[in-house]
Image (cartoon, rainbow, N blue to C red):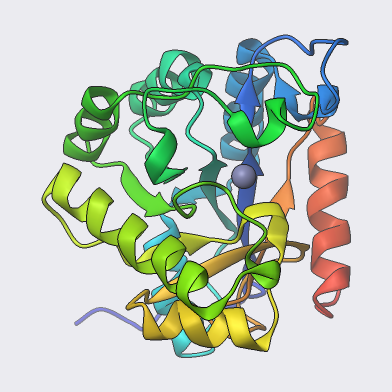
Length: 252
Ligand SMILES: [Zn+2]
């Protein structure tokens, strides 16, 4: 008979990492800090792994959160907002090489296009993933989530437009990948009680915000994340995760 193992370890932390663009920071961009160089991205994965952080999926983090449990050891899930082509080119292969996956939040009306929501505001044009690339990543085990139809400011929308952004984007993505799409990400991190209720009504099972924090202390429609930027090298990434833990009210 096996003896029960004494559980001496403290419970772990679930950190959901948020990335946008993969590439060298482009100073011409209004959001230059959102570019993470491919080599840095790989180093971040390896840095966390070397410190015994386990890679997991957003769905897994959500399942645990529903029961208010903390993981037995530290774990991280990777998410990408906007579905940039650079993520497909550089980040997905790095994850796949390490047996890891991620959740990619797609702007359903802009598939194969560009980031019109940013370029309209004066930022650089960046290519987005095509339908074929999104399907390929879904088949490779990556989760595809919705980031609305047009990257709208949801709190400003009429009831009908809000419903369309939420419901139509989910249906379009489900048609594309032939699977359920339970995950949603609020554009600009903007939501209020009305938007949150509409997300639930639209059939999503969980949603991520851009508030700094670690998972497990909020409802599953307000999962906070750790926004990883161009300079989050090793100890700086860990420092940010510690800040997220404090922001969530967890010790250490
Ligand atoms: Zn976005």
